[in-house]
Length: 389
Image 1 (cartoon, rainbow, N blue to C red):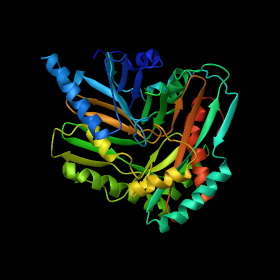
Image 2: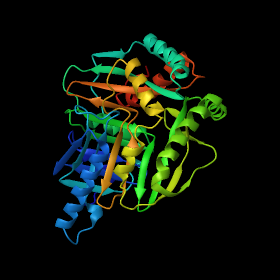
Image 3: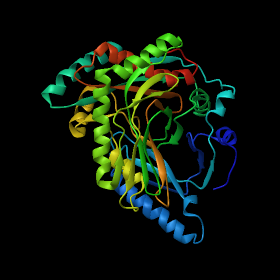
Image 4: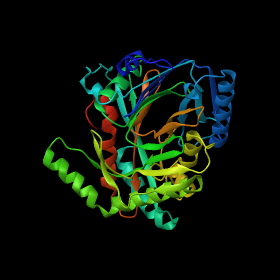
C-alpha cells in the first residue's frame, strides 16, 4: 500500500475502482490483479483466503496487511448474482475522510429525465399489509420489505459525483463504491457495520428500528425520543440482535452484548443500534468468513431467514441484486470490515436503481412503513440534488 491524503483518494476515484470511507480509514483500490466470484459465499471466503496467503508467500517478507481483497456480496447469491471479490493491482489506504469532507464543495450530478417507483407506493402499502398477515401464518418474527426508484438520465452518468456528494453529506458510517460483475457500480452510504475483525477482536453494530430526522430541533428530538420508547422498534431490534449473537456464538470464545440499544443518528434517520464485541476462538476465521455467516441478517431480510427470504421474493416486484448485501475488504491476515449495503443504488450507464426497505413485525403500520422507506431514499436523492420523494 502507498499513502495519500483522504481527499486525494476521493478525487482520484473513477468508475471501476473500489472506494470505501469509514470513521477510521479511506481505501481506494484500482485495477484488477485477480477477480473471484462464487455463488457459495463460504467457498468464496476460502478461495480468497487461499489466494491472499499464496500471494503473501510469493512476496515473502512483505507485510501481509498490504494484500487486500475488496468487493461485494449480494442479497441472495446465485449463478447470475454471485459474491464478487477483487484483489486490486494498486491499493491506497490512509486516514479518515470523515468529517473533514463536509467542507468540500458539492459536485453537480446530471438531472434525471424520469423517476419511476417500483412498485407504486399504494402497492407497497398493500404488500406490507400482506406481510403482517403472513407473519403469523408462516411463524415469522420479522420480514423486511423494500421498494425501489428507477432513475433514467438523458446521457451517460458516472458514479463519481454521487459518491463525492455522499461523502460530503454523511460524516460517519461507510461510504462506498464497488464495481459489480454485471457491469454496474454499487454506490451508497451505509450507517451499519455488519462485521469488523482485527486480530481476534470481532465487532458487529446491527441497526434496526428507525425514525426520520427533522430540520426542526424540537421535532427531531421528539422523533428520537419516540423511537427510543417504541415497543415495535425495540421488538424489531431485539430480533436482529439475538440473531447476530447466535450466529457469532460458535465462532467466539467470548461475546459482550449491551442490555439495551442506543440511539444512532445519520443526516436523514435515527436508528436503534447495539455494539456487539467478541473474541474469536479460531484465528483462521477471516472477516469474509464471518460476513458470509452473518449475511443476510434480520435487519435486511427477516427471521427465520429462509422463510423470510421466500416471502420477500413473493412480495417484492424486483430482484434486489447487491442491495441489502455487504461491501468491504479483507486482508491476508484475515482482518477486514464489511458494511451492510443499504442506502445505496446500482448505477448503469444511463440509469440507476436506488433502494429502501423497512422491517415488518406484527405491530407494523403499512402507511408508516411507506413513510420510513421514503425517508431512507433521502440519502441518495440528496446526493443527486433531488428533493425527497
